[in-house]
Image (cartoon, rainbow, N blue to C red):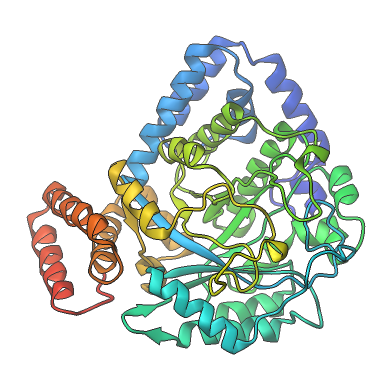
Length: 471
């Protein structure tokens, strides 16, 4: 029985409700008056229900699909302006006891070399990332109670935060680890993590169990209820997502929207971020084995509808996607992207990429400097900002500020300060030239003269050698 506030996975992600929603969307995909009313509601920037979002995604009326795309662009600009947050994944270990059939880390894969970073190796990886200019990391590792216990994760977080190399430091560590206990989530919170991220992979329980035949992750309910336990452990910034292509995208899209609704209703705060990865080639994994792959045009439609349905939530896309696709989804709703990623364990200090330990192949292999310049050429501000997290603007507090529209008063100046640091410390001459011009233009756009003056003062301080200034 569907219950958005229930703590039970099979009640807040109710199969019957999803199937009824899909039937409703199919029945109304050409219902112009209904779809227009849904778009009118979305334009108020107060969100959509999972049924309304499903109708938008199924819509086959060309001009209304186009209107959905335009509305997504407008909502994106309203809440996020032209800021794009930068991050990088850091893979600590590929030891794993799970049997996930879509992941090369699965326990039965005897072809992949197993590797776990020591704290000294983590230090070297972090310095390499700092020397690129990164300030925000997402740590990743397989689930293994012996090789990757919570104590290893906590020690690694302490190591990462402790490293200050030249003008580099990592100011926010997001964590993407397996579902765990309330006690362990409390330990992660106390360690000062940013966002806790966990992908559902698929919300279709029958398909989930087929894809996860062995290991702790095979417990659908325990995995699906992880965010409830994370919230009970004090974490208020949580990121969700599915791996599109594992099963029918329509089912997973509705499940994703229902999960966001559950978090808002039952936990008091919706997802801080939603990620939209698609299945990619990897060692021992062939995407052709998965027949539900999502084509580019429908993928763009998914991103646009998510932005209309959850206007305040950040959206993440990784280097799984090509430059062409990443460029288009930036307009439609994406607010965070990775740059110069390595998905292999120890990948940032390798002279040559060790593809054998990679979790998936990359489609965008550009350097961070190339990505930064590309973003600025497109009219975006590449932001390395972590100020909200360190100022306590997280969870419900962040959402209240965001919904009020006041988030621009701190996000815009902070987004200008961090690329200034990048231009001073890491940029190539060509990128710095573009960046300095971009910064001057963005400062002039700020209408509040007092804010503009304060920002210019901080930019001058950065020129003189100060770092980590924030509003």
